[in-house]
Length: 338
Ligand SMILES: NC(=O)c1ccc[n+]([C@@H]2O[C@H](COP(=O)([O-])OP(=O)(O)OC[C@H]3O[C@@H](n4cnc5c(N)ncnc54)[C@H](OP(=O)(O)O)[C@@H]3O)[C@@H](O)[C@H]2O)c1
Image (cartoon, rainbow, N blue to C red; front, side, top):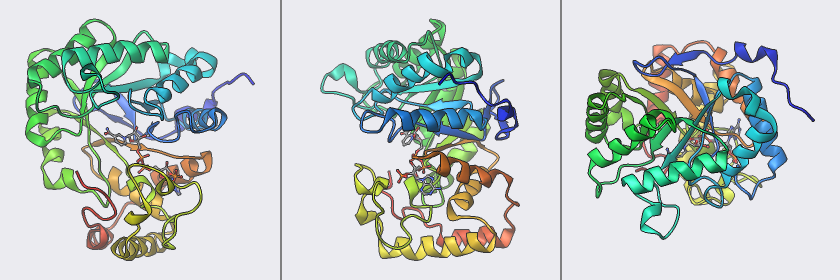
């Protein structure tokens, strides 16, 4: 059926400015990391992504690596653009990334100019786009001079293949240096994309929140639900059929430990007392920080997505509630911490 977006989409998530840029992004962005490759039905992907756009989520985050197999999520999103969303390209922020390994060739990984720029060309072909809105260095590459990596990012903008540049998973000093080099190149760093949730507090500990604010760089923080650990789905100590922990390289039944169950159970009790779910509490908690431009969420159904977005209208946390969350929000719970 021909797709027509909902008129109500402009009443969606609050828009937040990305650092000191002119770009405003929805407080919740949507990521295609898992279940948007070829192992998941295309019709389900389409339903979720179109619902997200209807709900006011204008920003879709992809990477050359997302699938399985690698590149499949970009191809599937390219199909969605071709068949449904392409007419609304002006209303969309499409991000992609390069630099994490996607194959055995030395040019299919790392932060070299060759790896980043040839990947960007490939992504544009798969997406069927002339430009992406945000192009990322997916991870720091200690073996490539930072000048080369950020120079390639700046050239992506210079050639018109990207509108803005970004970094992901950088340690604080390398993020600061990337911001400086890009400022000097007159292609300011738009955003940094680290992981952040009640169970992963690295960016609080390592000063990334402060550094981003000082450098005028936005933060798009990923996995706000700790891949589903901060929802009610694992609270019984079992893995429901179809859940990510069932078959994923990044989450396994071993992550559902006794410590996890105790802490997530306590957080769930606190959420219930506030009249919300654990997922809603976890998403709202990430967004409480003014440095966070957008929380980058995943969902495997429209129901999950709609449920989670209710977090945006919840009452703010009291100081006592935040202190209670700190008691159980222990860095590393259930996660392989980088
Ligand atoms: N830059 C990087 O290195 C990097 C790394 C990782 C992710 N990311 C980005 O961040 C995005 C989000 O990551 P993420 O998917 O880990 O985020 P997340 O929001 O923490 O986890 C999403 C998953 O949690 C489960 N879930 C969501 N809502 C639920 C609910 N209401 N009840 C029960 N379960 C629920 C679903 O998994 P089930 O399949 O179990 O239903 C869903 O796919 C990715 O798509 C990607 O764009 C970036």
